[in-house]
Image 1 (cartoon, rainbow, N blue to C red):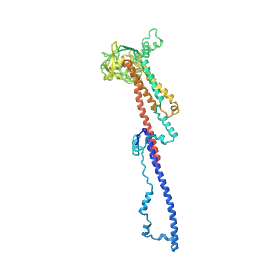
Image 2: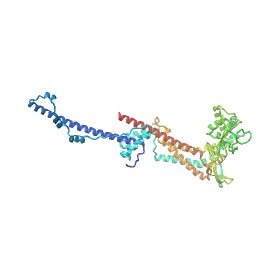
Image 3: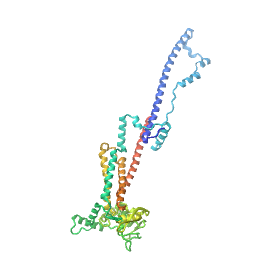
Image 4: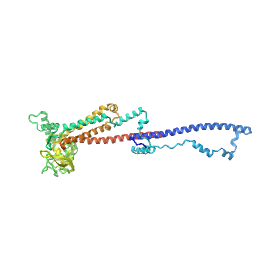
Length: 496
């Protein structure tokens, strides 16, 4: 058997069905030919029999025998043996009769995978040629083109062209340059005696936060209004997880190791911009603090200074107000999911800058790494700055995709499902992968400063890989079910 180049399940199934139909066609042709020969022989035999009958009647009449009473005449055994078909004649008839074998079929099973297993066995048994796509090989060009276009419209086209690669590469390049020259690091930092400049955008955000916290007499009306709003939310949104030190009277039922004013927002998961809407709301309703200790241990302790808030809507509003009031403060709010790193006590690949010279020390744990990153400006303001990188990739590739495939996407929008467009998701995933690789170069240029790591791009990359996996699974499931229904319909029609 030739090497199997046909990997598409639909193509395999079609090839097997076509082989079965060809066998049925050959068998029907053979049967038709045999029936035609049989009819011809029967006509000849009937003519000869009619001639013999006429001759016999003539002979009997010449001897004075009444042919109308022959039904009462007994035929002797000798005559029956003489007129019976001999064994030689039987063999001759058998040899002239076409031999038709039973056509083997592959019937649809309950699942597509089980059906495809039978298809593979059938292909191996009959050594079917899989070198050529049966859709192109056996169908007229216009029919094959229509089927392929319908397939692409319903399930999306996964094939890339050179412009697709160029679009992905260019968008990733722009994103990498943005990461290196604009996103940079949260703040100016000395590393190994070299000063690395912080991001101008993050610096702008931090400057706005300072003006909101201290607008002064000469501050703008906007900053004064924001300052009053921040103060109002801070006074309203007192929460049980906002404890900064371990001391008598803080209300905690158990001390949180390493709790300090600089790191308490990182340690309490209620301050996480995303996890806070689950953990923070839970803490407000329960009257507790949930987070991590300095040793990486996960803890959830009650706070006797706060009464639980049973109303989930009120707890949700209080959570939003508290996060908003914390954003412009000097310590800010940590980047999403950064606090989860505290649970890992294993060694990270990073060494942290030590002292004024920024000389790198020994490798530290992920727990220490997350605390260092947060204290050195890895807050929600810099996370917004970092988000420019994945935003560039998403906007560039999606815009190109809509423009390049306008004719194929929009006219068929009644069947096109963007949530199942595997090609678009594959392009996005590839673009984010290249961009994340470029972030390694940026970290090298910044003396392997961990705050040069683009946390936002990493989160989007993880989400992108997961979406691609799920999309492939759903697409395969839909195609398998579509094909299985089709083969069942074909099988039912053939049987009927």
